Amino acid sequence: MSSTDRDVDHALAYPEPPASPLWHRHGAKARPLTEAQQKRNRELLDLAQRKPRTTTIAA
Image (cartoon, rainbow, N blue to C red):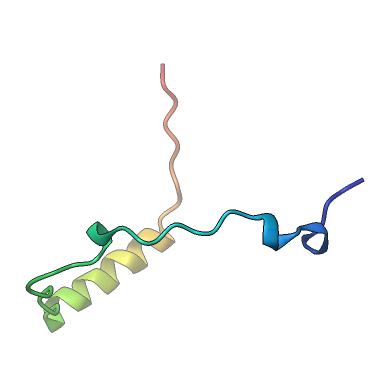
């Protein structure tokens, strides 16, 4: 017999722990990308999506 989401009693599940304070950034924010950097990123993304994936076989 398979279990479904309806069979789960969420009251018995452990509560999610609080987020770590290390996940929050403090201080200066990252600089926005320049138009040239954005264009280069778009070109590289486009190239990566068109290029066939290659697999390497460990010898």
